[in-house]
Amino acid sequence: MAKVMVTGADGFIGSHLVEKLVKTGHNVRAFVYYNSFNSWGWLDSLSDEIKNELDIFSGDVRDQNGVRVAMHGIHTVYHLAALIGIPFSYHSPDSYVDTNIKGTLNILQAARDLNTERVLVTSTSEVYGTAQYVPIDERHPLQGQSPYSATKIGADRIAESFYKSFDTPVTIVRPFNTYGPRQSARAIIPTIITQLLNGQSEIKLGSLTPTRDFNYVKDIVSGFTAIAGAANTIGEEINIASGTEISMGQIAEELINKLNPSAVISCDEKRIRPEKSEVNRLLGCNKKIKELTGWKPDYSLGEGINETIDWARNNLGAYKSSIYSI
Image (tube, rainbow, N blue to C red; front, side, top):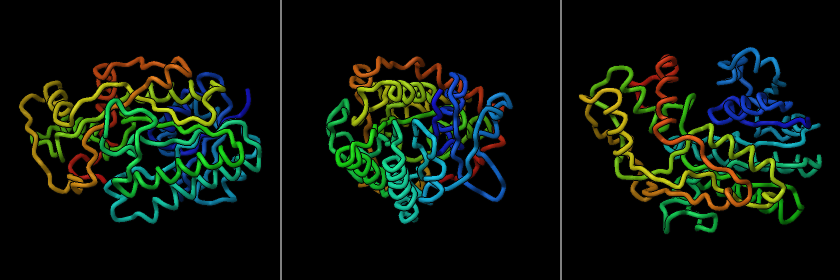
């Protein structure tokens, strides 16, 4: 089978995608962020059976030469490498421009020069900002409500330009809020679960009113592979969404009732986004991905939450639940 590459392979979604690709017989090059600890991120937690099948490439998507070397002989690139923390983007926007925009440009330029067969560029539902209408389809206006979302909009538009200018076979894949095992504590669901599992009776959260369209990570991964396997997705922007929404307060109450009914929610001011930066509502339309690929989610929110809790119980050491992670 032709070789594929996953950038951001050491991260949350990337590690699950790598695992899925290996299990389905793909020859995988895993592009991980170079560091002096020789850490492969979440890939280190996978079984030896999976790791022994990987071609690990340590590099940095900001480095044009390294990206080009990594992409030699690659048929399909799943580009997931990005800086994603919204609060961190408020005070370090330069690093987001370098990684999210310039890193994506490096992937696209190499793909053009090397005649790469498929490139999937990972977007985010944050590019839509607060919903102007629901469900949010791919024609919804884009709004840069944080430096993070602005850089992802920039990356999306550069990807679009390479398809329209050079016929680079690009697809923009736009997952809505993803959750599941291995997610960092910068996200709402692991933030709540880890505080509860560590016995904290006061659960510190930010705003409780915003709604999100939550998707279990295995459903997001199956969306990626479905899109990559369909020729009619080239040149398209495609949501991966459940088509349902739930507020931060509701998901917190459900987890509290499940894990520690005596716990209470406390508002932590430093976890609240600036007013004009808060995305108040996200509810995605998944009609396009269903029509183009036949994809549909396999996990309900309850099923995904149960698997996430089970994993977190056995991996609490990976989290610092007593501090605010940005």
